[in-house]
Length: 271
Image 1 (cartoon, rainbow, N blue to C red):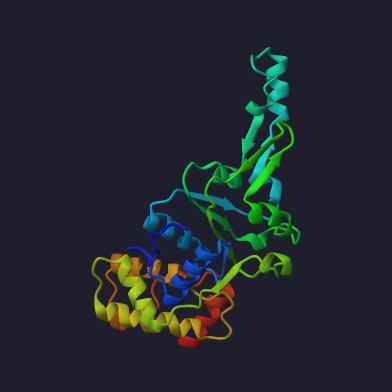
Image 2: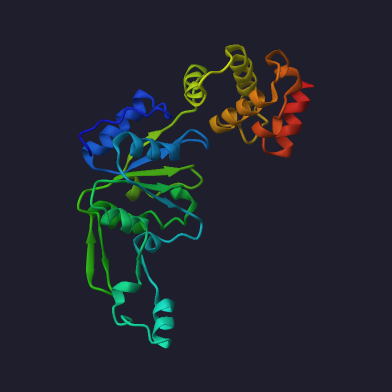
């Protein structure tokens, strides 16, 4: 890892435990697997490290249909066939039709970079195991051109998971693990103030009181997250809401609560 130490950024408040996990992952040269409920800053961590250390960031967003090969490279046979039909020059140069994926781009980087594999648990169960060799050795082989792509400098790999699926043991053994717990009220106060140049203390106090009250309702299925609290505060400020009326009126509730059954539960509890 870079000799520079990550301590957070001007827009990302990192706990001492998270800072320690980032440092250990760098020292041991292992991927850092970050878990936590949605909205706790898992994806933003990679962006913050990139900003703080001045390194390029490559983001591989994982979907249910994503395959490990997609992150390495794709051989565009269709484009090559199309070019051959129209007599394009260089059609015999297969390398022209090799398109690197995000993993490939990170390995090809001339400088150390950050590689974010975002929401790995969205893919099928075999996906993590299919990347074991590449993440261990930081290289892969392109069969069509008989070329080995090997990272000149090992990327800092951040992997996020929402815990939708259990990840294979063989994969977990190769990772440093950290769970981002939901912020306490004191930590949330610090996070919010990073996003606002100035904010009325009374408004923030009343908004957080209502926010955590909603999160504490057991029947609420989708708990509002940090990002939703920040959006709600923006809405409250823009609407000029009176802090003393927040608990009873619950303005802009749809910014915080996103399921109709949760809205019903909150309103029933409050009114």
